[in-house]
Image (cartoon, rainbow, N blue to C red; front, top):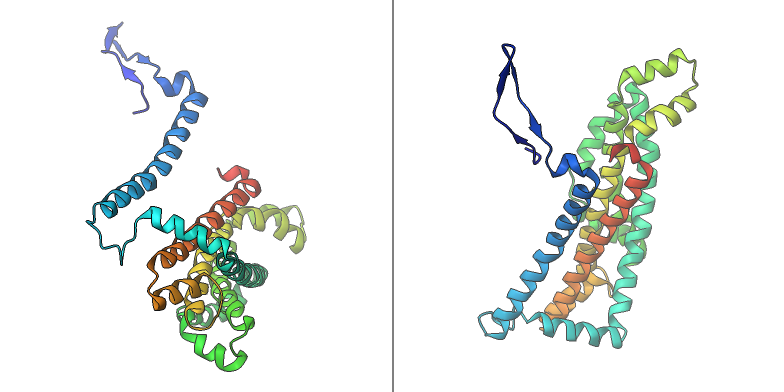
Length: 284
């Protein structure tokens, strides 16, 4: 199971005893955990490295069509070119700015509203069906409406990200608050805690892990949505870089945009996991 070995059973005084030999987990639990983490991180790095190496090998041998799958070395060279001419920093800065403003605005408002709705059962019963109905609407489908109302400016793209994050975080927060055990709340009532004290000291710590999960999910959706918006309603950004590269027939620039989008999603997820470990040390 965990490295423990079993020795044959022996009979002593008509009772059966089974002796256990400690395995590596029992002898050195911290060292085993450290080695396990190193192995997992090594595998996480090794898999993409191997895939890129295979891609490079196949492209160099003309197994892959270079017009569709340029070699990673070509992509890296093109990456350096668009960094040098300023196109790439402008695209990354535009996308990150839209994601950050929309994510913070939508998520923060959803957290506050979700705490209120989850704390009052009648309010939850009244609003939950409407929230569920609005959540199921694909947010990219309302992009034409936002363009009609707000035009092609930054407001449209930021608002689209904010709406996407809002409903994901809102539903997650409502469910997290509603799912707090009544035993915890009874303890607060027995201590005559106020509503604010109960919310801060009992409800919020108990609901925080699930709320942070909603925030992580929203970060990924924010990246996806902004790329879709930049395809059709932007003149700068990573989505525009991908779309414009396809129009111009420069696939290596298109792959630079795709990889950059992926890296932003990974970094956002790692950042939020770090925040989760910091805020919920009891939930590791």
